[in-house]
Amino acid sequence: MGIIRNLASHFPAVCKSLIRNHHKIVMSRPVQARRTAGVDKNLWVEFTQLAADYKPVNLGQGFPDFSPPQFVQDAFCKAVCGGPSMHQYTRAFGHPPLVKSLAKFFSRIVGCEIDPLEDVLVTVGAYQALFCAFQALVDEGDEVIIIEPFFDCYQPMVKMTGGKAVYVPLRPKVKGSSIPSSGDWVLSAEELASKITARTKAIVINTPNNPIGKVYKTEELQMIADLCIKHNMLCISDEVYEWLTYDGAKHVKIASLPGMWERTITVGSAGKTFSATGWKVGWAIGSGNIMKHLKTIHQNTVYHCATAAQEAVAQGFEREYELFGTPESYFQQLPAMLHLKRKKLASCLEGVGLQPVMPEGGYFMIADISSVKVDFNDESTKDEPPDFRFVKWLTKEKGLGTIPVSAFYSPEHSKEFDKYIRFCFVKEDSTLDAAEDILRKWSKGE
Ligand code: PMP
Ligand code: GLN
Image (cartoon, rainbow, N blue to C red; front, side):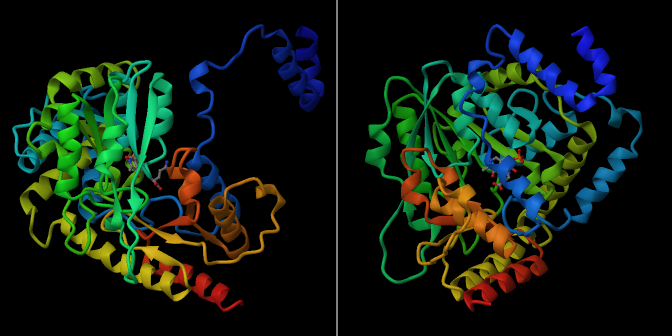
Protein backbone atom coordinates (compact mmCIF):
# COMPACT_ATOMS: atom_id res chain seq x y z
CA MET A 1 0.00 0.00 0.00
CA GLY A 2 2.86 2.39 0.84
CA ILE A 3 4.35 1.99 -2.64
CA ILE A 4 0.98 2.48 -4.24
CA ARG A 5 0.40 5.68 -2.22
CA ASN A 6 3.81 7.04 -3.27
CA LEU A 7 3.03 6.26 -6.85
CA ALA A 8 -0.38 7.84 -6.47
CA SER A 9 0.98 11.35 -6.48
CA HIS A 10 2.68 10.68 -9.84
CA PHE A 11 0.04 8.57 -11.57
CA PRO A 12 -3.23 9.44 -9.80
CA ALA A 13 -5.69 7.74 -12.17
CA VAL A 14 -3.82 4.43 -12.42
CA CYS A 15 -3.16 4.29 -8.70
CA LYS A 16 -6.72 5.08 -7.69
CA SER A 17 -7.79 1.91 -9.42
CA LEU A 18 -4.88 -0.06 -7.92
CA ILE A 19 -5.87 1.05 -4.44
CA ARG A 20 -9.48 0.09 -5.10
CA ASN A 21 -8.50 -3.33 -6.39
CA HIS A 22 -6.16 -3.83 -3.48
CA HIS A 23 -9.09 -3.30 -1.10
CA LYS A 24 -11.18 -5.77 -3.04
CA ILE A 25 -8.43 -8.40 -2.82
CA VAL A 26 -7.95 -8.11 0.94
CA MET A 27 -11.65 -8.08 1.95
CA SER A 28 -12.30 -11.50 3.42
CA ARG A 29 -16.11 -11.16 3.78
CA PRO A 30 -18.88 -9.25 1.98
CA VAL A 31 -18.88 -5.49 2.52
CA GLN A 32 -22.62 -5.40 2.12
CA ALA A 33 -25.06 -6.16 4.92
CA ARG A 34 -27.75 -8.58 3.75
CA ARG A 35 -30.55 -6.08 4.34
CA THR A 36 -29.29 -3.94 1.47
CA ALA A 37 -29.51 -6.80 -1.04
CA GLY A 38 -32.28 -6.45 -3.59
CA VAL A 39 -33.23 -2.90 -2.62
CA ASP A 40 -30.38 -1.10 -4.36
CA LYS A 41 -32.36 -0.04 -7.45
CA ASN A 42 -34.47 3.08 -6.94
CA LEU A 43 -37.01 4.54 -9.31
CA TRP A 44 -36.38 8.17 -8.30
CA VAL A 45 -32.63 7.90 -8.49
CA GLU A 46 -32.90 6.45 -11.98
CA PHE A 47 -35.52 8.80 -13.40
CA THR A 48 -34.18 11.94 -11.72
CA GLN A 49 -30.83 11.17 -13.36
CA LEU A 50 -32.54 10.61 -16.71
CA ALA A 51 -34.24 14.01 -16.35
CA ALA A 52 -30.91 15.64 -15.42
CA ASP A 53 -29.24 14.08 -18.48
CA TYR A 54 -31.94 14.85 -21.07
CA LYS A 55 -33.60 17.94 -19.51
CA PRO A 56 -37.12 17.08 -20.71
CA VAL A 57 -40.28 19.02 -19.93
CA ASN A 58 -40.65 17.30 -16.58
CA LEU A 59 -44.00 15.74 -15.65
CA GLY A 60 -42.13 12.90 -13.94
CA GLN A 61 -41.08 13.29 -10.30
CA GLY A 62 -43.88 14.66 -8.13
CA PHE A 63 -43.04 18.18 -7.05
CA PRO A 64 -44.55 21.57 -7.84
CA ASP A 65 -42.47 23.74 -10.19
CA PHE A 66 -44.11 26.81 -8.60
CA SER A 67 -43.32 28.43 -5.26
CA PRO A 68 -45.00 27.62 -1.95
CA PRO A 69 -47.59 30.17 -0.79
CA GLN A 70 -46.15 33.50 0.34
CA PHE A 71 -47.20 33.06 3.98
CA VAL A 72 -45.01 29.99 4.50
CA GLN A 73 -42.11 31.49 2.58
CA ASP A 74 -42.35 34.56 4.84
CA ALA A 75 -42.58 32.31 7.90
CA PHE A 76 -39.43 30.46 6.82
CA CYS A 77 -37.52 33.76 6.27
CA LYS A 78 -38.71 35.02 9.63
CA ALA A 79 -37.59 31.80 11.29
CA VAL A 80 -34.14 31.94 9.70
CA CYS A 81 -33.74 35.55 10.91
CA GLY A 82 -35.30 34.71 14.29
CA GLY A 83 -32.18 34.49 16.43
CA PRO A 84 -29.83 31.77 17.64
CA SER A 85 -32.39 29.18 18.78
CA MET A 86 -33.74 28.85 15.25
CA HIS A 87 -30.34 27.56 14.13
CA GLN A 88 -29.81 25.03 16.89
CA TYR A 89 -31.27 21.69 17.90
CA THR A 90 -34.84 21.66 19.06
CA ARG A 91 -36.90 18.95 20.79
CA ALA A 92 -36.03 15.53 19.32
CA PHE A 93 -39.58 14.40 18.58
CA GLY A 94 -40.73 17.70 17.11
CA HIS A 95 -40.26 21.42 17.61
CA PRO A 96 -42.78 22.32 20.37
CA PRO A 97 -44.73 24.90 18.30
CA LEU A 98 -45.09 22.40 15.46
CA VAL A 99 -46.28 19.41 17.51
CA LYS A 100 -48.75 21.74 19.23
CA SER A 101 -50.08 23.07 15.91
CA LEU A 102 -50.33 19.60 14.40
CA ALA A 103 -52.12 18.23 17.48
CA LYS A 104 -54.56 21.16 17.55
CA PHE A 105 -55.25 20.95 13.83
CA PHE A 106 -55.69 17.19 13.56
CA SER A 107 -57.66 16.80 16.82
CA ARG A 108 -60.43 18.71 15.06
CA ILE A 109 -60.25 16.46 12.01
CA VAL A 110 -59.79 13.05 13.64
CA GLY A 111 -62.36 13.87 16.28
CA CYS A 112 -60.28 12.96 19.31
CA GLU A 113 -57.89 14.82 21.60
CA ILE A 114 -54.38 14.42 20.19
CA ASP A 115 -51.60 14.91 22.72
CA PRO A 116 -48.81 17.00 21.14
CA LEU A 117 -46.08 15.44 23.24
CA GLU A 118 -47.23 11.82 23.21
CA ASP A 119 -49.05 11.28 19.93
CA VAL A 120 -47.03 13.28 17.36
CA LEU A 121 -43.60 12.67 15.87
CA VAL A 122 -42.02 15.13 13.41
CA THR A 123 -39.82 13.44 10.83
CA VAL A 124 -37.59 14.15 7.83
CA GLY A 125 -40.47 14.06 5.37
CA ALA A 126 -43.13 11.38 5.18
CA TYR A 127 -40.35 9.03 4.10
CA GLN A 128 -38.81 9.00 7.57
CA ALA A 129 -42.21 8.68 9.25
CA LEU A 130 -42.79 5.54 7.16
CA PHE A 131 -39.30 4.27 7.92
CA CYS A 132 -39.80 4.74 11.68
CA ALA A 133 -43.19 3.01 11.51
CA PHE A 134 -41.87 -0.06 9.69
CA GLN A 135 -38.71 -0.31 11.80
CA ALA A 136 -40.58 0.14 15.06
CA LEU A 137 -43.50 -2.17 14.39
CA VAL A 138 -42.48 -4.94 11.98
CA ASP A 139 -40.38 -7.86 13.16
CA GLU A 140 -38.57 -10.52 11.16
CA GLY A 141 -41.15 -12.93 9.79
CA ASP A 142 -44.08 -10.52 10.20
CA GLU A 143 -46.26 -9.96 7.17
CA VAL A 144 -47.34 -6.53 5.98
CA ILE A 145 -50.18 -6.16 3.47
CA ILE A 146 -49.53 -3.52 0.82
CA ILE A 147 -52.28 -2.44 -1.52
CA GLU A 148 -51.13 -1.97 -5.11
CA PRO A 149 -50.30 0.32 -6.79
CA PHE A 150 -48.22 1.64 -3.88
CA PHE A 151 -45.64 4.35 -3.30
CA ASP A 152 -42.51 2.39 -4.09
CA CYS A 153 -40.59 2.83 -0.80
CA TYR A 154 -43.01 0.65 1.21
CA GLN A 155 -41.55 -2.46 -0.37
CA PRO A 156 -37.83 -1.91 0.45
CA MET A 157 -38.75 -0.54 3.88
CA VAL A 158 -40.62 -3.74 4.75
CA LYS A 159 -37.82 -5.85 3.31
CA MET A 160 -35.24 -4.04 5.45
CA THR A 161 -37.13 -5.04 8.61
CA GLY A 162 -36.89 -8.71 7.67
CA GLY A 163 -40.67 -8.78 7.30
CA LYS A 164 -42.57 -10.01 4.27
CA ALA A 165 -44.67 -7.80 2.01
CA VAL A 166 -47.94 -9.37 0.84
CA TYR A 167 -49.63 -7.62 -2.07
CA VAL A 168 -53.27 -7.05 -2.93
CA PRO A 169 -53.98 -5.05 -6.09
CA LEU A 170 -56.73 -2.54 -6.67
CA ARG A 171 -58.39 -3.77 -9.84
CA PRO A 172 -60.05 -1.57 -12.46
CA LYS A 173 -63.75 -2.44 -12.89
CA VAL A 174 -64.62 -2.93 -16.53
CA LYS A 175 -66.99 -0.13 -17.49
CA GLY A 176 -68.82 1.19 -20.51
CA SER A 177 -67.64 4.09 -22.59
CA SER A 178 -67.33 6.89 -20.02
CA ILE A 179 -63.92 8.26 -18.97
CA PRO A 180 -62.20 5.89 -16.55
CA SER A 181 -61.81 7.22 -13.03
CA SER A 182 -59.53 6.22 -10.16
CA GLY A 183 -62.77 5.50 -8.28
CA ASP A 184 -63.27 2.48 -10.58
CA TRP A 185 -60.15 0.88 -9.12
CA VAL A 186 -61.41 -1.21 -6.25
CA LEU A 187 -60.22 -3.56 -3.57
CA SER A 188 -61.89 -6.94 -3.22
CA ALA A 189 -62.80 -7.56 0.42
CA GLU A 190 -62.57 -11.32 -0.20
CA GLU A 191 -59.14 -11.07 -1.79
CA LEU A 192 -57.89 -8.85 1.02
CA ALA A 193 -59.29 -11.14 3.72
CA SER A 194 -57.72 -14.17 2.01
CA LYS A 195 -54.24 -12.63 2.41
CA ILE A 196 -54.48 -12.21 6.19
CA THR A 197 -52.62 -14.82 8.25
CA ALA A 198 -51.64 -15.21 11.88
CA ARG A 199 -48.40 -13.40 10.96
CA THR A 200 -50.07 -10.30 9.48
CA LYS A 201 -48.95 -7.36 11.58
CA ALA A 202 -50.10 -4.38 9.56
CA ILE A 203 -51.73 -3.09 6.41
CA VAL A 204 -50.46 -0.03 4.51
CA ILE A 205 -52.93 2.18 2.69
CA ASN A 206 -52.37 5.39 0.74
CA THR A 207 -55.25 7.77 0.19
CA PRO A 208 -55.32 9.85 -2.00
CA ASN A 209 -53.19 7.31 -3.80
CA ASN A 210 -49.94 7.76 -5.65
CA PRO A 211 -49.94 6.99 -8.62
CA ILE A 212 -53.63 6.53 -9.59
CA GLY A 213 -55.28 9.21 -7.43
CA LYS A 214 -57.86 6.96 -5.78
CA VAL A 215 -59.55 8.55 -2.77
CA TYR A 216 -60.90 5.75 -0.61
CA LYS A 217 -64.59 6.07 0.22
CA THR A 218 -65.79 5.68 3.82
CA GLU A 219 -67.29 2.24 3.00
CA GLU A 220 -63.96 1.05 1.59
CA LEU A 221 -62.09 2.31 4.65
CA GLN A 222 -64.69 0.73 6.91
CA MET A 223 -64.13 -2.64 5.22
CA ILE A 224 -60.37 -2.31 5.85
CA ALA A 225 -61.00 -1.11 9.43
CA ASP A 226 -63.29 -4.08 10.15
CA LEU A 227 -60.55 -6.48 9.04
CA CYS A 228 -57.93 -4.61 11.09
CA ILE A 229 -60.08 -4.87 14.19
CA LYS A 230 -61.13 -8.48 13.57
CA HIS A 231 -57.56 -9.68 12.98
CA ASN A 232 -55.83 -7.29 15.37
CA MET A 233 -53.76 -5.58 12.67
CA LEU A 234 -52.16 -2.15 12.71
CA CYS A 235 -52.85 0.30 9.90
CA ILE A 236 -50.20 2.61 8.44
CA SER A 237 -52.14 5.24 6.53
CA ASP A 238 -50.09 7.41 4.16
CA GLU A 239 -52.13 10.59 3.66
CA VAL A 240 -49.55 12.98 2.23
CA TYR A 241 -52.04 14.23 -0.41
CA GLU A 242 -54.88 14.66 2.09
CA TRP A 243 -55.89 18.17 1.00
CA LEU A 244 -55.88 17.40 -2.71
CA THR A 245 -59.25 16.01 -3.74
CA TYR A 246 -61.33 16.93 -6.80
CA ASP A 247 -64.91 16.86 -8.08
CA GLY A 248 -66.44 16.45 -4.64
CA ALA A 249 -64.32 13.49 -3.54
CA LYS A 250 -63.80 13.67 0.21
CA HIS A 251 -60.71 12.54 2.04
CA VAL A 252 -61.55 10.48 5.12
CA LYS A 253 -59.00 9.55 7.74
CA ILE A 254 -59.19 5.87 8.64
CA ALA A 255 -57.99 6.88 12.13
CA SER A 256 -61.32 8.69 12.59
CA LEU A 257 -63.38 5.48 12.22
CA PRO A 258 -64.51 3.78 15.44
CA GLY A 259 -61.81 1.57 16.95
CA MET A 260 -59.13 2.78 14.54
CA TRP A 261 -57.38 5.65 16.36
CA GLU A 262 -55.71 3.19 18.70
CA ARG A 263 -54.31 1.05 15.86
CA THR A 264 -53.51 3.59 13.11
CA ILE A 265 -50.34 5.55 12.35
CA THR A 266 -51.24 8.43 10.06
CA VAL A 267 -48.41 9.82 7.95
CA GLY A 268 -48.36 13.36 6.53
CA SER A 269 -46.00 15.71 4.70
CA ALA A 270 -45.51 19.47 4.81
CA GLY A 271 -43.89 19.05 1.40
CA LYS A 272 -47.27 18.20 -0.12
CA THR A 273 -49.34 20.27 2.30
CA PHE A 274 -47.54 23.55 1.55
CA SER A 275 -46.00 22.78 -1.87
CA ALA A 276 -42.50 22.72 -0.37
CA THR A 277 -41.17 19.21 -1.02
CA GLY A 278 -37.57 20.32 -0.46
CA TRP A 279 -38.19 21.26 3.17
CA LYS A 280 -38.55 17.59 4.09
CA VAL A 281 -40.80 18.07 7.09
CA GLY A 282 -43.22 15.22 7.72
CA TRP A 283 -44.98 13.60 10.65
CA ALA A 284 -46.54 10.48 12.07
CA ILE A 285 -49.56 10.77 14.35
CA GLY A 286 -51.06 7.99 16.43
CA SER A 287 -51.75 6.74 19.89
CA GLY A 288 -48.86 7.46 22.30
CA ASN A 289 -48.33 3.79 23.17
CA ILE A 290 -47.55 3.06 19.49
CA MET A 291 -45.76 6.33 18.81
CA LYS A 292 -43.25 5.74 21.61
CA HIS A 293 -41.75 2.91 19.52
CA LEU A 294 -41.45 5.13 16.44
CA LYS A 295 -39.73 7.68 18.67
CA THR A 296 -37.20 5.03 19.71
CA ILE A 297 -36.19 4.60 16.07
CA HIS A 298 -36.18 8.34 15.46
CA GLN A 299 -34.05 9.25 18.49
CA ASN A 300 -31.45 6.68 17.52
CA THR A 301 -31.25 7.59 13.84
CA VAL A 302 -31.82 11.24 12.92
CA TYR A 303 -32.68 12.55 16.43
CA HIS A 304 -34.43 15.70 15.20
CA CYS A 305 -35.32 17.70 12.07
CA ALA A 306 -34.35 21.18 10.85
CA THR A 307 -35.63 23.73 13.38
CA ALA A 308 -36.38 26.69 11.08
CA ALA A 309 -38.35 24.54 8.65
CA GLN A 310 -40.43 23.13 11.53
CA GLU A 311 -41.08 26.64 12.81
CA ALA A 312 -42.31 27.75 9.37
CA VAL A 313 -44.61 24.72 9.04
CA ALA A 314 -46.01 25.45 12.51
CA GLN A 315 -46.84 29.01 11.42
CA GLY A 316 -48.47 27.61 8.28
CA PHE A 317 -50.71 25.32 10.32
CA GLU A 318 -51.62 28.11 12.74
CA ARG A 319 -52.80 30.22 9.80
CA GLU A 320 -54.71 27.32 8.28
CA TYR A 321 -56.37 26.54 11.61
CA GLU A 322 -57.87 30.03 11.65
CA LEU A 323 -58.90 29.98 7.98
CA PHE A 324 -60.04 26.36 7.81
CA GLY A 325 -63.03 25.89 5.52
CA THR A 326 -62.85 29.44 4.11
CA PRO A 327 -61.90 30.40 0.54
CA GLU A 328 -58.66 31.98 1.85
CA SER A 329 -57.42 28.65 3.17
CA TYR A 330 -54.52 27.21 1.15
CA PHE A 331 -56.11 23.81 1.70
CA GLN A 332 -58.97 25.07 -0.49
CA GLN A 333 -56.94 27.18 -2.89
CA LEU A 334 -54.40 24.52 -3.85
CA PRO A 335 -56.96 21.84 -4.86
CA ALA A 336 -58.98 24.51 -6.71
CA MET A 337 -55.89 25.42 -8.73
CA LEU A 338 -54.92 21.79 -9.30
CA HIS A 339 -58.43 20.87 -10.40
CA LEU A 340 -57.93 23.14 -13.44
CA LYS A 341 -54.49 21.72 -14.18
CA ARG A 342 -55.87 18.20 -13.94
CA LYS A 343 -58.59 19.08 -16.47
CA LYS A 344 -56.05 20.66 -18.77
CA LEU A 345 -53.78 17.59 -18.71
CA ALA A 346 -56.71 15.17 -19.16
CA SER A 347 -58.01 16.95 -22.25
CA CYS A 348 -54.49 17.11 -23.69
CA LEU A 349 -54.00 13.35 -23.19
CA GLU A 350 -57.40 12.51 -24.63
CA GLY A 351 -56.66 14.77 -27.58
CA VAL A 352 -53.63 12.70 -28.52
CA GLY A 353 -55.28 9.33 -27.90
CA LEU A 354 -53.72 8.52 -24.53
CA GLN A 355 -56.70 7.48 -22.40
CA PRO A 356 -56.27 8.98 -18.92
CA VAL A 357 -57.70 7.61 -15.69
CA MET A 358 -59.21 10.67 -13.96
CA PRO A 359 -57.72 10.95 -10.47
CA GLU A 360 -60.08 11.81 -7.61
CA GLY A 361 -57.13 13.22 -5.69
CA GLY A 362 -53.38 13.75 -5.46
CA TYR A 363 -50.67 14.99 -7.81
CA PHE A 364 -50.84 12.43 -10.62
CA MET A 365 -52.76 11.09 -13.59
CA ILE A 366 -52.04 7.78 -15.27
CA ALA A 367 -52.72 7.10 -18.95
CA ASP A 368 -53.00 3.93 -21.01
CA ILE A 369 -50.30 3.69 -23.67
CA SER A 370 -51.34 0.33 -25.11
CA SER A 371 -52.89 1.86 -28.23
CA VAL A 372 -49.67 3.68 -29.11
CA LYS A 373 -47.27 1.97 -31.47
CA VAL A 374 -43.67 3.06 -31.09
CA ASP A 375 -40.68 1.56 -32.81
CA PHE A 376 -38.11 1.52 -30.02
CA ASN A 377 -34.60 1.38 -31.41
CA ASP A 378 -33.01 1.66 -28.01
CA GLU A 379 -31.07 -1.59 -27.45
CA SER A 380 -30.17 -0.47 -23.94
CA THR A 381 -33.81 -0.87 -22.81
CA LYS A 382 -34.68 -4.06 -24.71
CA ASP A 383 -35.08 -6.20 -21.56
CA GLU A 384 -37.24 -3.66 -19.72
CA PRO A 385 -41.05 -3.62 -19.33
CA PRO A 386 -43.01 -1.72 -22.03
CA ASP A 387 -43.86 1.24 -19.77
CA PHE A 388 -40.18 1.69 -18.80
CA ARG A 389 -39.16 1.55 -22.48
CA PHE A 390 -41.88 4.00 -23.42
CA VAL A 391 -41.00 6.50 -20.69
CA LYS A 392 -37.30 6.40 -21.62
CA TRP A 393 -38.13 6.80 -25.30
CA LEU A 394 -40.49 9.72 -24.57
CA THR A 395 -37.82 11.43 -22.47
CA LYS A 396 -34.91 10.90 -24.83
CA GLU A 397 -36.62 11.25 -28.21
CA LYS A 398 -39.48 13.67 -27.51
CA GLY A 399 -38.23 15.60 -24.49
CA LEU A 400 -41.12 14.76 -22.13
CA GLY A 401 -40.46 13.20 -18.72
CA THR A 402 -43.01 10.83 -17.09
CA ILE A 403 -42.86 7.78 -14.78
CA PRO A 404 -43.64 4.08 -15.54
CA VAL A 405 -46.54 2.75 -13.48
CA SER A 406 -45.39 -0.88 -13.20
CA ALA A 407 -42.75 0.46 -10.77
CA PHE A 408 -45.60 0.86 -8.26
CA TYR A 409 -46.33 -2.89 -8.33
CA SER A 410 -44.76 -6.03 -6.91
CA PRO A 411 -42.94 -8.27 -9.42
CA GLU A 412 -45.88 -10.72 -9.27
CA HIS A 413 -48.42 -8.16 -10.50
CA SER A 414 -46.36 -5.62 -12.44
CA LYS A 415 -46.90 -7.26 -15.83
CA GLU A 416 -50.66 -6.72 -15.60
CA PHE A 417 -50.12 -2.96 -15.24
CA ASP A 418 -47.18 -2.17 -17.48
CA LYS A 419 -49.38 -0.41 -20.03
CA TYR A 420 -49.72 2.78 -17.99
CA ILE A 421 -47.48 5.80 -17.49
CA ARG A 422 -47.82 8.52 -14.84
CA PHE A 423 -47.95 12.28 -15.43
CA CYS A 424 -47.58 14.85 -12.64
CA PHE A 425 -49.88 17.85 -13.17
CA VAL A 426 -48.70 19.96 -10.22
CA LYS A 427 -46.85 22.20 -12.64
CA GLU A 428 -47.02 25.74 -14.01
CA ASP A 429 -49.48 26.10 -16.89
CA SER A 430 -46.51 26.96 -19.11
CA THR A 431 -44.98 23.54 -18.30
CA LEU A 432 -48.26 21.79 -19.07
CA ASP A 433 -48.51 23.80 -22.33
CA ALA A 434 -44.99 22.74 -23.30
CA ALA A 435 -45.92 19.09 -22.62
CA GLU A 436 -49.07 19.48 -24.71
CA ASP A 437 -47.07 20.94 -27.56
CA ILE A 438 -44.74 17.92 -27.55
CA LEU A 439 -47.62 15.43 -27.45
CA ARG A 440 -49.57 17.21 -30.23
CA LYS A 441 -46.59 17.39 -32.55
CA TRP A 442 -45.83 13.74 -31.92
CA SER A 443 -49.45 12.66 -32.56
CA LYS A 444 -49.37 14.57 -35.87
CA GLY A 445 -46.16 12.80 -36.77
CA GLU A 446 -44.12 16.03 -36.79
N1 PMP B 1 -45.84 8.94 0.47
C1 PMP B 1 -46.27 9.19 -0.77
C2 PMP B 1 -47.53 8.55 -1.25
C3 PMP B 1 -45.55 10.04 -1.61
O1 PMP B 1 -45.98 10.28 -2.85
C4 PMP B 1 -44.37 10.63 -1.13
C5 PMP B 1 -43.55 11.52 -2.02
N2 PMP B 1 -43.87 12.80 -1.74
C6 PMP B 1 -43.96 10.36 0.18
C7 PMP B 1 -44.72 9.49 0.96
C8 PMP B 1 -42.72 10.96 0.77
O2 PMP B 1 -42.98 12.29 1.15
P1 PMP B 1 -41.85 13.30 1.67
O3 PMP B 1 -41.34 14.01 0.48
O4 PMP B 1 -42.55 14.19 2.65
O5 PMP B 1 -40.80 12.46 2.34
N1 GLN C 1 -43.36 11.31 -4.14
C1 GLN C 1 -42.79 11.85 -5.34
C2 GLN C 1 -43.34 11.11 -6.54
O1 GLN C 1 -44.05 10.14 -6.42
C3 GLN C 1 -41.29 11.87 -5.37
C4 GLN C 1 -40.56 10.85 -4.56
C5 GLN C 1 -39.09 10.94 -4.70
O2 GLN C 1 -38.57 11.76 -5.42
N2 GLN C 1 -38.39 10.11 -4.04
O3 GLN C 1 -43.07 11.54 -7.63
